[in-house]
Image 1 (cartoon, rainbow, N blue to C red):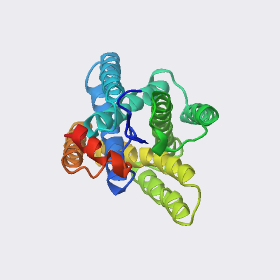
Image 2: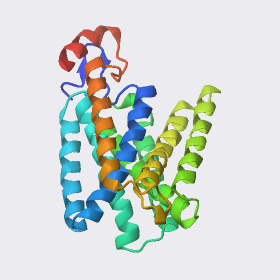
Image 3: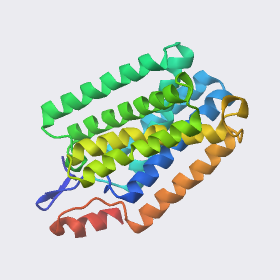
Image 4: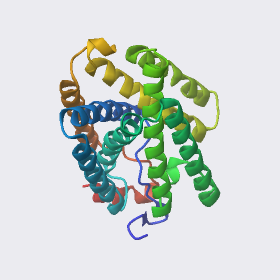
Length: 265
């Protein structure tokens, strides 16, 4: 694992979990929903999904090839998981006719299996322990499952349960307060992190759909194209800001900070 360790401490491959982390995470979920809907509905859906997969594969490969956490590769990978993950979740419902209740169950089981296997193999689910290639694989498998589960869950509440996009967004925004309060009260931080991580997906997706969907479907009718453009600009601006300021850099031991800063440029 050359390049993952410097001095006596391991350098993680994920950012520091702070307000910026949650802000960009929610923005990428909104962007992923809007961009996926725009591409699939405005262009050939099969080509759109194929293109989404190719860019997703390139982004993930870029992330795995860098030796430590770097802002652009990581958040580009997250953004493409958001786009392609939305395409996969939607394809199961629209293309294959799988009800949202079934897809939510399938994705929940898949997430549980990944987390269970990760814990059995590594003994931890903490994102602060992502310092080896194997742990990074488990991490990104978990991220993909959470995005798919969150997408299907948001669609389930908005359409199947007839809550609408705005109400769903508000519901999940209130729900994410629960793991935050629980964490403040001393509940296991790994558990509360992953619960909150799952909930960020339907928050961003629900509000993106609310702005982009036509009024006849319960949205504002702005259109997926404009919403895609705005969210892409916001995501890119945030990533550029973090790359410049380093506010997302993971905490590393004092004796490795110099080498880490040098590699970050």
